[in-house]
Image (cartoon, rainbow, N blue to C red; front, top):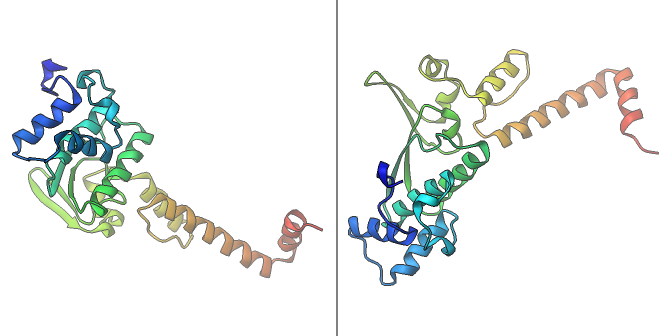
Length: 212
């Protein structure tokens, strides 16, 4: 761990205290402030004496964020932060970033090639190709085909576009949970239409779902 200069403190507590010192941040109760910084990212105070080098990959990511939060910056700049994380871990950090953004009023700048990591998070997106700004806008550009000249299309966008091409009236969402709700509403509307217009379907449907 020390060989790649990932951490300089011998313990988690020392690592955060050193970060606070480097950025000139002072707290009346340093230990409490360190513990609070860890709690924000989901780490308990039992980690205070742990060697950062012994932490798991995900725990190291959390410690990095805790160090950043310890000096209370207004802006967080994270490059390829989601790299190497499993879906469950990505989902954890997605919710954490939303919490930092909405509850702690932090501006978060994500530098990544994976647009999936940005869903539900970004208010604005800027695409740079060969040193030039080529596309800039809000969430609406997720469904702009020009965007996918430069980056891979996320599965949620690919699915929504396919459904629209098949004639389904699906709205353009960037939240998978909202998309699922939309699919349910769309399917239900189609079933209701069939119940009204197709007596055979209605009879079959009623036999399955109507209880005596």
